Image 1: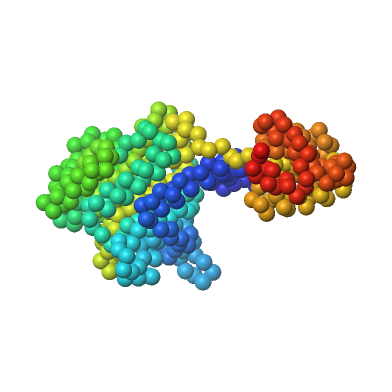
Image 2: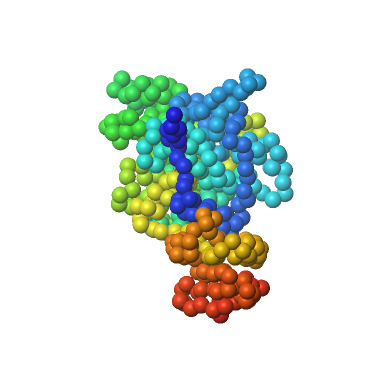
Length: 422
Ligand code: ATP
Ligand code: MG
């Protein structure tokens, strides 16, 4: 029997992991300068955490969760997103009591959603996200958006579009909800069965429907921004002002609603506008979630965050033809010509590596010519040759492959010579 990687997942082979590591380190570096610290939560949580916070009318909860019972009869779910677990940890460990507020956190790790597989959509994917919890200043909304944009820019992306909207507060949402029901109710029979259910439970979700997105009533639907009360409108204006101060261009899309229930006020998405990116253009989504902490049993703690998948970031880099750093070439390869030399090679290899030099040797008992070829193939900067003569003289032949020079170097001086080529 031949085994295959499960549908919707993929193996990252050595040729690809270099790109991933480059992205991961630029993400960590960006978080460092913005002063966001890493948090790691388990990959599974109590199912109810997600049904309560993400919302039971959302696609995630209705169709996409990997839910199972463990041997103790508990219902657990592989995390489909990172915000609920982070806020759960924030509440559980009373991070709201820390003197340094707001609490600024980031996470990076696998998420799981049972989705139809297509380009840019996997069943296991890696999300990087941040959460700033404990402040409702519009300036922190702008900071979070700016951090996301910075990650993409540092990675080298140029074709980006930031779209923002405000979902307002509870009062706004209720007024808008009434308007949505009036708008859709007379023709709800023309919509998918999910939308028919959404009409009563959560009509805002209709605007995010992927089946009925081209229905004419979608375009004429009442816009949230027309229902913002004064304080919500003021908040939104201040977020935009802060973005202006940061020099971050944006578009306002009054129909942007996010896929999760817990959002209010600021909502945003970052898309790739690169040609050839394909049908799915959203790279990142986020927003404010005041009230989520209370919803899961914590104190009042306004928060804002975003999530992006590394998979889609890499797709966007591909679409723009941006290359991240090549995989690193080793400093040295030792070519050993006989058994005693091989033993010396093992010793020298240990010494070089202790000195922080990336080095390798032949383990297949190959002839000299084949060993030289191997050194060439992996792009070693130095080839160190050891044979009978070299052992006798206590000095190896060290070839500088870039300069095309070679010299005899006493064994004890090889590490230094490779580290600082003369
Ligand atoms: P979509 O509308 O594409 O389904 P979403 O609203 O479900 O997106 P979020 O839950 O906001 O997405 O997740 C944030 C980001 O995570 C997305 O913008 C995207 O970059 C990424 N993402 C979401 N689902 C997947 C997936 N199945 N595979 C890869 N990346 C994903
Ligand atoms: Mg989705």
